[in-house]
Length: 89
Image (cartoon, rainbow, N blue to C red; front, side, top):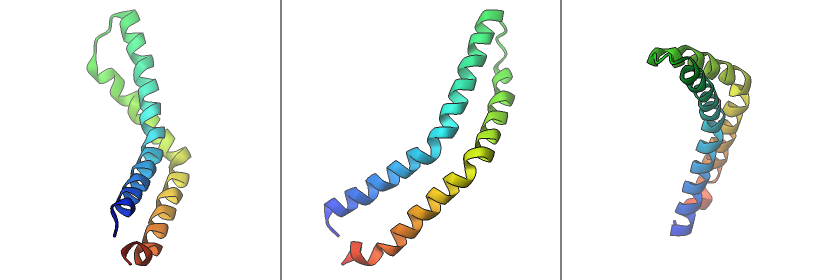
């Protein structure tokens, strides 16, 4: 296994990790920003106020995008397992 192969496998793993986490992180970031602006405007500084909307948003995003995320993960692992003999030898 050459260093280039190791870097390629690592890069592919990082790309799939970003693709899988981006929808969840971006949606919770947007909701957190909206709630922070609301808190700043109303001067309500309750830390638990952001928890429930973020939790609801993450659940909604996982419901909508979850099947495609799971399919991307399954495709990645199938490709990785299929490529093991060529990566080793």
